[in-house]
Length: 241
Image (cartoon, rainbow, N blue to C red; front, top):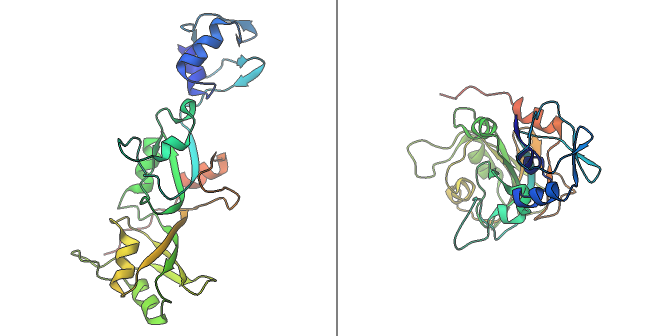
């Protein structure tokens, strides 16, 4: 059992303050009966709650796909920079956090959720969840350099990067690069290891989830049930020796 105002806030009907006002104004019905007390307790598993005739269902966890634009940081708050959460309305952003991070100048797929278990599954180094990027390079990448990226390169750490997938994109100075690690500035360091540089970076996939091509930069949408199941159904690869 939870408070009615918490039920509606978590269901996306508004902020806690906004839904309290709606309840007090008589805009909210619980199982067909008008309720004016925000503290009224309801069973979130079985109750039917409507606001001005629109039904809201309680959701413990929420999942969003964001097409991250350049110029915002992957954080929940920052005193100097605009964050990815600033792209969400106040009533939605409650408890959300980005799953991993994209650099400030990197665009593309970013998942935001309040589901810590899913975030752990996607980010755990032992799981080797793949992430694919469209990489704009300073000069065309040669076949030999693709081979090096595929076999693993020295980026200044104890071990070389894990074998990656790398192939040419349509544009002359672009490649796709799929990695199974998340080291600091890894893509940029990998290109530097083959004497090249990154001019543009866009994440296309994370695990089995692909960025919605109809989602403009700076826009977001909720994940479908099928997409959520895909993320939880990621086949964990064995750690390579």
